[in-house]
Every structure is written in C-alpha cells, then in structure tokens.
Image (cartoon, rainbow, N blue to C red; front, side, top):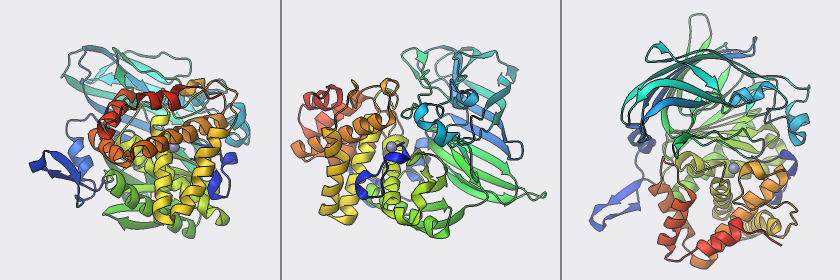
Length: 497
Ligand SMILES: [Zn+2]
C-alpha cells in the first residue's frame, strides 16, 4: 500500500504462469501451453485446511455476523494444545490500536472523527465442545484457543461465532462512502513457526499479514441491490425475501477478502480463461480497470507462469492508498478512477496484479522482509510497462521509481530488509522498500541477465507456499550460478550514506 498523496498523476510518481508443461524426459519443468484456468489452485487445494464462512451483512446495523467452521489438520510437526487465530479487526476498537489512526492517516481515514469497530465473540468450539480462549494482545488481534492435545497429523473442527462492527473508516476494514470494505476482516489461522504461533502487531505501515494457503467456501447474505467483489469465483442468487446471496469458492488461497457496494458499475472480460471483473464508480472506469488487469495477467502469465485461479476481481474502495492486494482480488483506491488519472490507475493495477504472483501465489514474510513481495511487484510492474509501452516508457519509470529513491536522502536508519514495525513514515517505507528494493532486482538483472528466469523458477518452486528470504537467496544463486549474497546484503541490509 502507498499513500495517495505521494501518488502523482504522472507515470513517474505512481505507487504502489503459462501453465506448467512438464518436460519429463529432461527431468525439469518448462512453461508451455496453458492448462485450463484455475487448475493449479484446484490441484494445490488437496490436503489443505478448509474454512467455511457463513456471513450476514446488515448495513443498517453496521455489522457482519460471522460463523466460521475450520477443518484443521495439525501439519506443524509439533503436538499442539492451542490454536491461534488472527482477528485483525480487533485493532479498530480504539485510537490507540487502530492501524488507521496514526497522524499521517487519521484525517484521510476518519474524516468524520474516530469511529470504533471490532469483533464481538459469541463463542468458540472444538469438535462441538466449548473451547477456552483469550486474546493475548491489547489490540485483540491474537486469539488463542485451547484444544485437547493434538498430535501431528491429527485433526478436528473449530467453530467460531462472532459479530463484526464495521467502523466508519476509509481503510482495509470499514465503511467509506458507498463501499463496505472487508480486508483482513475474517478470522484466520496464525502461522506456526519455531514452536509458536506468529503474533505480529497490526502495524499501520506495511502489510503485517503472513498466512498459509487454505480452501475457502463462503456464503454471504446482503440486502438487495448490493454487489460483492471477492476472492475466488462467485455465483449469486436472490432469496425469497429479496436479499442477495453470494456463494464464493476459493481453493488454495492465502486469505479471503471482499467488499460490497450498492453503487458500483461493473465490467468483465476473459483472458486466458480467467474471468476478470472490475467494479468501479463508472462503467467506463470499470472497463478500463478490467482491460488493464487482463493485460497485466497476460504479461505476468507469460513471464512468471499461469495465474493460479480462475477469477480475478478488482474493486474501487475509498481509502488513501493506491491499492491493496488479496488473493484473486485487489482493492483499488477510488481516486485513481478519476478521468485524468488513467495512467496512474494502470500502474496501480499493474503493481497490485503482480502481487497475485508475489504474495498470493508465493507468500513471504511481509512483516520482517517486506521487500520480498513489494520490490518484486514493483519490478514486475516495470516489466509490464516495458512489455506494453516500450523502452522509453520503461526508462522514464525507472528514473522516477528506482533511481530517485536511491538518491533520496533518508534520515532514518532503515533498509529494504528492515521489519515494517521499524519504519516511522509511510513515505520512507515506500522509498526504501519499493524503490530501493527494486534497485536490488535491477542490479541482479544487470549483473546476470537471469532475473526473469529466476522469478519464474521462484513462482514454480514455491507456489502456494511461504518462501523465506533464505529460500529466495538459495534459489537465486542456483539459477544465476553466482553468489549474490554480498549484493543482497549491500542493497537490502546496508545503510546508504
Ligand atoms: Zn504492493
């Protein structure tokens, strides 16, 4: 995410898969004619944990009733006596904990003053028995649930009922203008590593979300007249009482997000078998967004391997960022749809769509190594521009998006490899993680000429997994045949004078 204020109208200042053909005889993978859309995700879905959500949206009450059923198998390798869920919306309860309440965001996110949101828990059950549970952080984003000892390989069913209160807030979660945004709103399993569940704070800077792929089956009931933009594929029906029911299926997804509005126009098109749908304030804006997204999917599919799912959706939301990525879905800041912001919109869509490979498909540690998805998406966006508009446009963009950040004077002691919680400013975060992170990638390309080959192998090797920085480094060295660790340390961990 990037602040809208630093996203200019000009190219320069803008923010934030071909199918696998197995060449068995050679013993390695090449990319060739596409499999049918979504096949990769369907195949990856086998054996993953599965969520079923039943959701009832009541805008007149500003609530979302949530029933979550999680069929969980302990694949951690450790015996477990508790599970941990991230309930990120808990942070919206107060000004002290809300990620939207820092000075730099407050006026843009709370134009009418602070509005509390959050989660009201009705109960948690494990295998139909009430389970003890408690929040273990002041923000109420880390819910630990006691369960009877669960050996590796064993499983059970976690049931959770709660009601979310939706704040008046222009952020990932909130009601803003005519849209209702549910980004990182549904409870989700924390990631288990090194003997415990991750408990990263909801940092207002960067995206602190780290999660494993799972299958989502979601049913959402909303008043008549609402449209739903969501992760996964969707069908809609009308209930006898006139309300709309949306039924979503999202295999092998790292998260599930959605937004609702009764004022969007929509446009759809197909590319490589993928259903691309855009929701925007105007029909013209929706058409433009769908067209740009289709173009980006084509470029990245060719460069990095097939898009993994069968649907991709964009929607305009009211928040002070360029965009925010979710699996199969991107929130796009509404201001980008202004008539004379078409260039900006295209670059935002190119960046967010790249996250479908560098975040949604290959996950990484967004809290501790934020460059690993942001710089890669920024680099991919440059490749999109080269592909579509040629060398001059690419060179101009490199000057402003990469060279300028390298020359900027930064007073804080931060590098692209700095954890997000150590950044004090959104602007500095963008300059360092996006701009200087992308400079690292351009340096790799200049030195080896093998960056795209590496990125394709990276997407293939770590599809539907979390790739650590060490995984990244080892594969990069293997594909390029060079020891690039010193270069990485120089660009990602060394303070510039
Ligand atoms: Zn991004």
